[in-house]
Length: 555
Length: 36
Picture 1: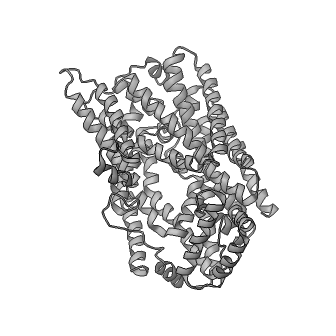
Picture 2: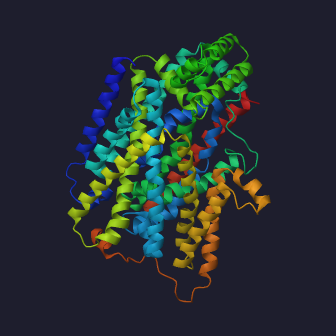
């Protein structure tokens, strides 16, 4: 990469660290570190919520998906606006009004300590691992493209984010997120403009080429449980997933708990409702435009340079003629078939999954964007990774300290003590994420396992929060329902025992968006059935502050 | 929650839904015009 591009990247990293630390000056207690003293304006909270879910995977993976698969993925987000509206009138007033630090703390007030601890533990388990994956995904791509050791790439992303999160807590995370969102959206728009200038065709011709290749199909109205992205899975399954993610995941909840009031908290969520679908369509459209760009310019046979080098070295007599045939062909279907064969060959040679979707955009950016703009885009990818990891680290630290350390180990310690422990917990989770990222890259299937692992819990945890809003539901019902929900989703995911043959053949194919619906419904049904056996008059009131320390800290 | 807050939330809600309908209509139009 040109030195000027590196100046932009390093300059931006230095700027956000200094800015994050500067924005958190004057913060001196746990409430400031975890909830910014509930002083954040709605627009900053809203942008920060959006930034946390816009990771580097979105910048390089989703754009790559746009190039290889078109706009279809946008259906994944169709449930988001609906989910935000539902949360705005249900969970947000409950959680913000109950003056808790974590979403799981609320569950103890409503049910009992074991339901709180189990949900908090599941959050730590899945988010702790996914934090590593968030860093690993771009680090692997940078390592292959720049030829650097993976550990350096992990450090380039992880160290600045961990640094400002340790020092500044949620204030630093939120205000840096705001700045980085400006950078990310600016970089995306700049790439679209650059692409429009570089494609030698009118906008109408560009759209016709993309349309004929099936890249502009945003809607698939077929109703099937096995197809990953359809209008219905996005609208129904997506609503459940987004309800769970934004309503029960501490990395999101903590952000709107830091808002000044309930009104500001729920208005902040509507920013995502406003912009998520248009932003995601823009991200996918960049991929579509890159696909069209390569119809007019020479395209690499393999986008991953590391794979390309490995195949050239291991099978030069096969790869050379294949590349020549690919370059000479003008038939799109033949070119795609040759690319498929080359990817298969790369998979055989390297022993890793044969996919280079994540390399399409970085390769295009470095080889075809003007100097300066390439640096801006790489800085935006790192910014997206830092936004995601800093939000996660902050919430992991808060849950570790509030739901475990303060709840079970040292309930009577001072506020200053909890502040120190929170910073240590942030450092621990930061190092853990970087270590997982370094090793996850060599265990390709681990990334998939972690992603599937998270989907076990999302729907089920949402089910527990739904139960919390039903007055008749009891603590035992919530706990047993949660276990039942996760078990059913695990069965659907990995297959049921072999004696259940009919289901065993069908169940593993169910798309993961539907698993959120299955998990949530199972928890509510089982929870309510068990709660029917409770003695009359045992219905708890909402919210009953059982944690006197929490009440004292939030007068 | 204040009555003003609720009114403001409802207004924002209407705008959110309007933006989504416009976004989906544009995506649908693009698909209908260039893919079918």
